[in-house]
Image 1 (tube, helix red, strand yellow):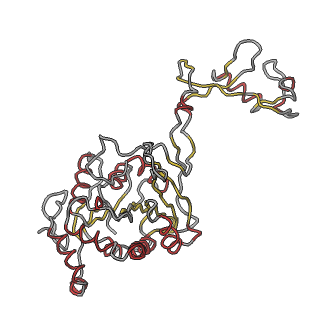
Image 2: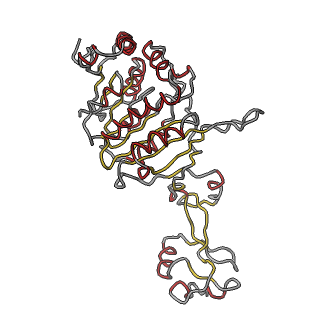
Image 3: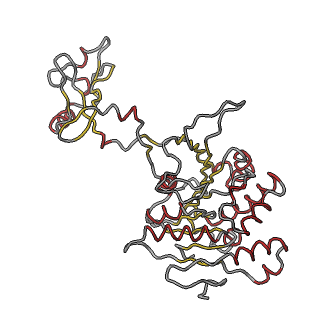
Length: 380
């Protein structure tokens, strides 16, 4: 599979052409089951038709539509690969039970992340405000890629770093903790006997030789007489808080990122997911590229990528974002239309064919190197 490609077309048809076990990470933000017309954001006639068809049969139709695609995604994932599916309260329960558990198995479930989109207060009503999205994390096997990532420190934690010296800003943490010990950590250090502190005695957090090393490095703070020494802990030593399932530290899209896409996701959200479940050089796939956030972030993080969308404007906007961050070290990429089989098109349902042909006539994306692309990907 050639990579670093933007493809205009139906993701189901394109998924069927991708080799099995070839992708490391899939992030998909499919249209939510919200029946809201903001999802038809670019005004492409093909999008309008797809939007109307998707919900023609209600939730069961939507789940069937999504499951068919997720089955293909499971096929193309490497054994070490994983999938992150972004949805909201309208269908998250259905998606987990009838799509992800069915395709990946219940053992494939890793996490259910809750992204708190905003802190705006709800107006008075008979229900609390729904201000979160769900991101399901499933893996193809137990041998999946996982890198520890950290959330930023809370303001309360940052406020603890109120001391400063030539090395930076720091807080102090105890070197003595409760409980007597008879071993090394219970020995006298700097004329301080830990067993004589506290009601029931105390002990050092580490051995005296390591305390000596801390002292040589200038990391031990000796408070006024009568107070036990403490360890200096600098703010630049803390990577943050180990990741939890509640993500309340990533704000909605900020003005400098906004491209006019109502359902656009912030780059920080995708950066966290891509760093967590892939390594440099791995392949990231987004079958609903939309405004191109996944592709732009994957490219910036030195991942290989493949993005698909049926909207001409979505492909063009994604390419524009890539061009803005291009430099001498950026890997090349291509933009193309999907090559369709003649018989497949010939025997399509009339309405499906109409949707397809309108989408193709809506405009043709430009290849980065110049020149329009035809249906078969060759220069027109």
